[in-house]
Image (cartoon, rainbow, N blue to C red; front, side):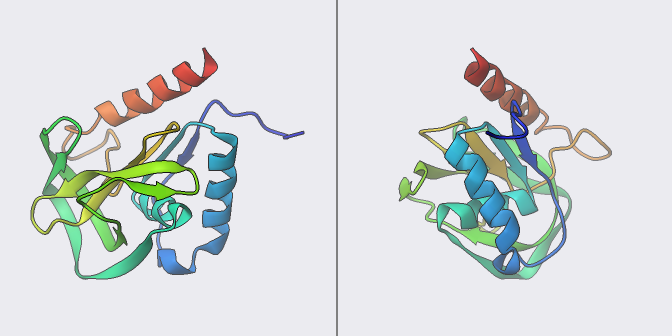
Length: 158
């Protein structure tokens, strides 16, 4: 029996090299195995990438600032986003990938340099973004992501 039965799990931002974050990756894999709705931001995106079997790498120049253009590939919409990261996920931009947790695809991409800015699983309720969609100072173009996460949790509960 599980001690906690959450409606969803949120993996937030945090410092560090994702290549050394074995414990968070194992924890995320456990969440994916339970098919609990999952939303990761920033470091959470990198952890999801690793949990799915993708690599990560250090950017030559990190993404910093509150005016980074990112395209949501599911809608085609370009969002102005806030970034503060020096690592990225190495996932194919041009195809759907098979992972131990189902099919995955790159959902968001940075228009400045084609860096992966988001992932989504197609066969279970999990997605992530590399940037900061938090409702705070800075752009609010990505606030819909929290609504998407709530919708995933509601759908799983129904």
